[in-house]
Length: 177
Image 1 (cartoon, rainbow, N blue to C red):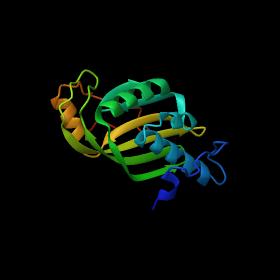
Image 2: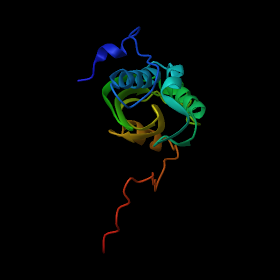
Image 3: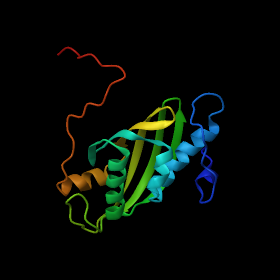
Image 4: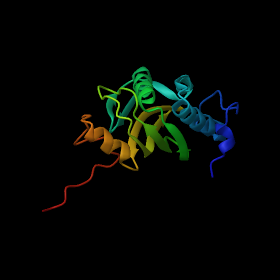
C-alpha cells in the first residue's frame, strides 16, 4: 500500500542525487510525490525535479507533446478547462519504469483546445506509463482505464489519435490469415 503521508502538504519529498542504485526508496517517493502533486495540485514547478526537459508525451487528448515546457502548457490548459479533482489510485516505480494511476473527477466549464465548455462532468481513470532515465521521466504515455473523458472529447469533435504505434520493446509477429 502506498504511503499517503508522502503526498500530504508539507511532507518532505525533495531528494537530491537521482539514482536507481542502492536504497532508492527516498528517490522513488520523491518521484511519485512530485509527479502526483504537480498534476493534482497544479504545481507544475514540482515536475522540474522529476521530468526531463525533452520528455516525450502522448495521450488520447494530446499527441506529440515533446518537451517539459510544452507538457506544462498542455496540462495547464487542461487543468484550467476541467479543474479536476485528482485521486491517486496507485503508483510504483521499478528501475526504468513507473506507473501512476489516478481518477479524475472533471467538469468542462472553460474552453479547451478549441472546444467550448459544456458544463458536462464525469470521471476518468488514467494510467500514466513512465519511462525513466537517470532519475528523470523521459517518456509519459497516458492510457485510459475508463472512457468518460475520451468519449466526451471525441463527441465534442476533438481530433483523437488513430493507428498509434509507440516504440515496441518486442515487435510482434503477424499472424497468418
